[in-house]
Length: 337
Image (cartoon, rainbow, N blue to C red; front, side, top):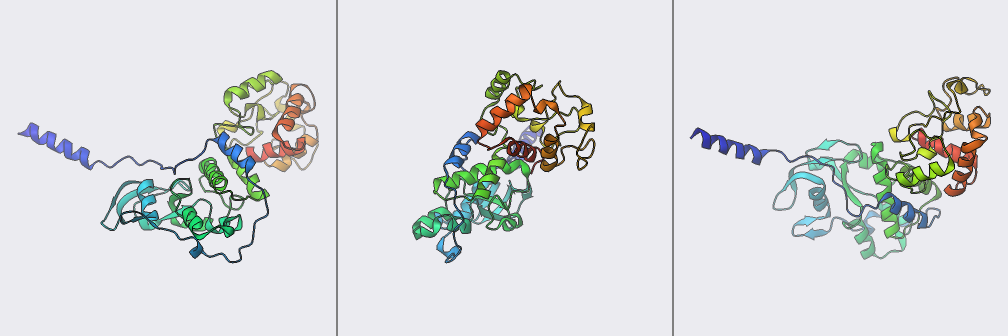
């Protein structure tokens, strides 16, 4: 009898155990390489007018199945242990907001975010759509256009593009950019110059590719071919991490963007600044300081030899017009800007 009771209690315990909370992701998020390729093909244009815009022109939360509308469908998809009533309203469940990492147990604390806001879409091409097209966009469950997030975070985003707003959780910037690019590409919506620059930087945070979409194996081969003395050439961005400082250098805000140490430079290099605007031992706290540092010729590695060849090759292959622009881009990304 005791044995039977023990088994029964164990089964009840297993039945009542809460399901593991996991971060849900919308469908059809592209790879980094796919996102980079798609971004390159999206038309860049000035943002259109807001005139005539109304959310009512984008009918949303339509019926998807039975009593469930779009919002309720996304809540069930993105939540863990979601239980609904006969009207498909979520009465219990747990939601992990990918934008800020916060967890919620009440559906009222969750907004369904349109990855590309309706207003943004209107100003980048949707103004010319038919109502059925706009309805499809506002209720798209096939592409990464809808996701459950913390309500006040979504409200802070509003209708801003990535050049004006990014998720508080920086580790989500990569995924966010890939989803934004996917939606803009699928719907043939335009992007602004600033928007493209922001997306490019955000895609640069992705751990599976670098500025040119190379894999770690390709990076290692590239570094080897140039004769770069990178200490960790097998890691992503290795040939792109430039620092002549054995101490200090780039702030390590991302461990995969940690500086490389080159043997031809010594720690004394960072203590010989000829530019008074750059404090000793504080050479690279901003992109501007980094560019000034290079312009002052502090480190001879940047002027000749393998690093010089590397920089020339990097400028040519990146599509960035000149060396100062490339260096500023590197420093900007290294500083997490």
